[in-house]
Image 1 (spheres, protein in one colour):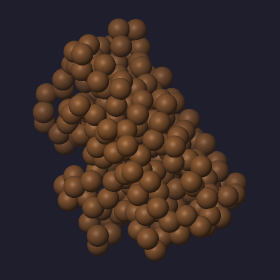
Image 2 (cartoon, rainbow, N blue to C red):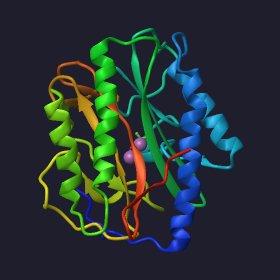
Image 3 (spheres, protein in one colour):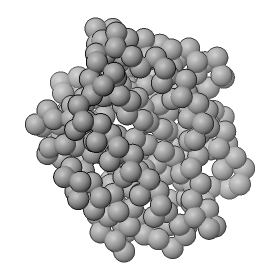
Image 4 (spheres, rainbow, N blue to C red):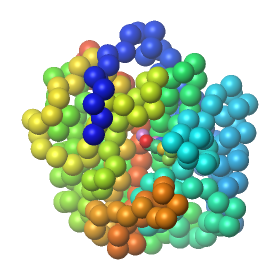
Length: 253
Ligand code: MF3
Ligand code: CO
Ligand code: CO
């Protein structure tokens, strides 16, 4: 639970968020064609780091609370925070979430997408589609006057109606010149509850949706979060700003 006040960004800060957000979206787009059977998650990491430096940006995860790599690569039953590794070779039928966060001029852009490797099962493909729809529905709730609980309620209603579950242990977050700050944005909850959204607030929506149980466990490396039942999990993320009239997605390429 984060306790910092929720900040309202100035137009100058919002401009910086737009710049870094777009670059983060472009990095995801740049990595997409590499996602093929035979590539290792370390190769994805190293290309991300190279591209990031070439564009004058920094990788926010590298060294963050001791995190050892530049991106997170979460394969199949990994819910989030999978660590790229030279021995982890993608194979036909896998799903992989790539989560990138860049820093430009002190401001953060955070986005992720779950990619299909070759041809995953119909169930896995449905999971990925439902997860993207969850993000879309969550974003559609964002406007001045709405409550934070409206976002999670929309996501949870749809995910559960499709027979899937919503992870509770990781939530969206405020983001600006701090990587993770207030407010928390749960992907489950109750309409009308929580703080009111106001223009200039910036936060992520990043639902993690599971085929089986919503419960997760963190492996001995201290980072890798997996589903307790080892069934598949998918995620996607955007960084967003509340505008005077609705919402602006900052992490589109
Ligand atoms: N990008 C992740 C998020 O969406 C956070 C990764 S923190 C790390 O909030 F240290 F694991 F990289
Ligand atoms: Co992220
Ligand atoms: Co995030």
